[in-house]
Length: 508
Image (cartoon, rainbow, N blue to C red; front, side, top):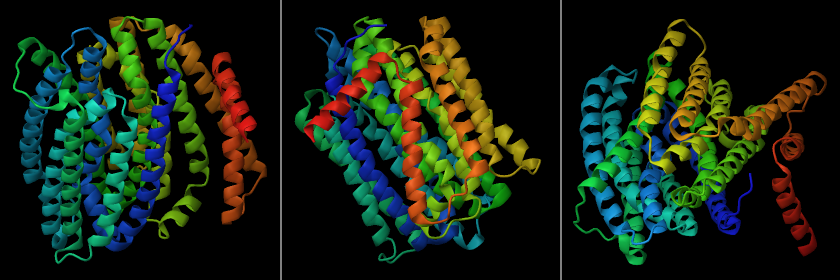
């Protein structure tokens, strides 16, 4: 498959997104350590139980914004497009979605909070955190249209700067939680809510100042409103299933293991969300041009970008996840100082789940670009929710806590197969080509990596010393990177890598 595209723009976008990620990861790692120390294991577990919804919406905001961004890209791509109308209608829709979300979650919280496994003396603080988390999530929903404008305009530098500002705000929060006169857990919930307001305001000011389409005007178009609301509604339903599954499993872990398990899950999800950003950054960089290619019916170029991004997502995830899986206890010890119980097995199970999930977002782009997401999101909703009864059965049968994430990985694999089949039937997705060019090389890579690491583990014992861990970690990254180059990349992609390496070598 031959294709041409603006690789310089994609590369520039990716650089800004990874600059954003490096800074936010560093700050997140540090704030998690301080937060665990300041709140304590129980309070940290409580926040991750009742306040986890705000963290999920923060991590999913990019996924939600792609619904609006898809329509904005279409308007930018066609002659006489009206992006202003798309933005204004999308803002109305997200106000309605935020209102619906607020009512539903308030009702659910009223009945569920008293039944959670929370110490009685912390229930009052937990209720306040829950309220602040709902408000922060509502603000995050209202920020989505402005996120979409920035991404559709490919202003990834601004997108990165705002994320870094948000991360710095969270760093400030961990130093303020013990300085305010209220309970430290309540302080944290309040400050996170205030930070979400600031981030929303920054989005608003920048977009209104630089992009005319982001200035709200009351203009109505029944056809466009139905298309947008249908697209956003089904997109919200599918992603809501993802959120409900994660939070539902968190509650099940609480019922069977208490807040200590929630604390371990919270630490694990800090790393999970970082890896999720890694995967999302690549598709965010590719998405605007991919959507335009689909809108212009340049399908060969669209699928070329899709296959390329799919392999890149899996390759970069593998480079990070494999050494992390091996050296996880040592990494957690260096990072946190104290490791909450259950964290290591939970995190390793989540890494397995994320490996399967890494294929999901590029396929998601096929449906979003085509604008046909109803069947896809219905499938997502039904299958992902199955993780909850499966988790309950596993915990009821006294399987270890990490087994729920192995169950999630199993369900995710079934879900992935189902959505690829739907893409084939509904959108004529080139499944055979996808399997040959993406799936087979990626799975072959995993088999080689697993076999080699298993062989090395039989003959090699790594000393529990920081310097040796760094050395072996670097060697492992080099090995995995080499395996990716040989097994996963095609001739064109290898040529690009060699050309970049030569330029770097010559410039030095």
